[in-house]
Picture 1 (cartoon, helix red, strand yellow):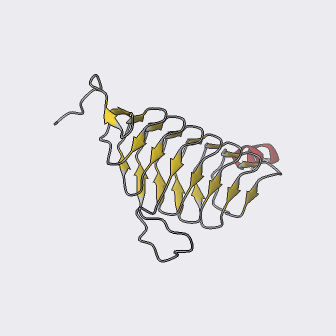
Picture 2 (cartoon, rainbow, N blue to C red):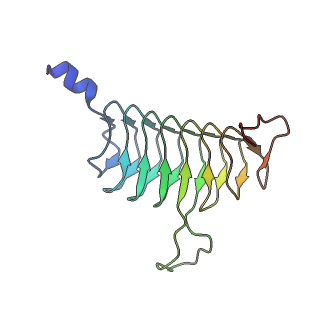
Picture 3 (cartoon, rainbow, N blue to C red):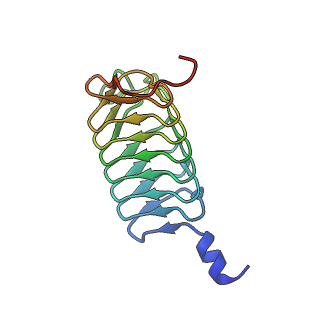
Length: 167
């Protein structure tokens, strides 16, 4: 393998990022002021914009975009081709208390090809289905079925949202 092809396969990690994980896929870009803890796994061809935090037990697929100001907490799985807009908020504890380390973690899954608009809030334990769209500022309190578009607080399906087959 030539030196040029080796560099094309390597992830780009900005010198001002703190990436402790060795599991960053080829072609992924991690920008300045991003923190990635040692146990996190990030796939190939992704883009993690500045000022993001990725905790240990986070799995991110291939070609995922994470825009600025997003924190990804333990128990989050993000499948391939997902878009996470700026300042999207995730949580993994339904009843947070200061100093409480023995909370019941609720895992969240964002399925392949879903998009989450800027400033949306995703409560713990939900599943956002493949190809679903979460509107900017929506508060997702329950599962979103594949292919649907949800907006508002709490998030509700748009009346014109296409219904997946078999529903």
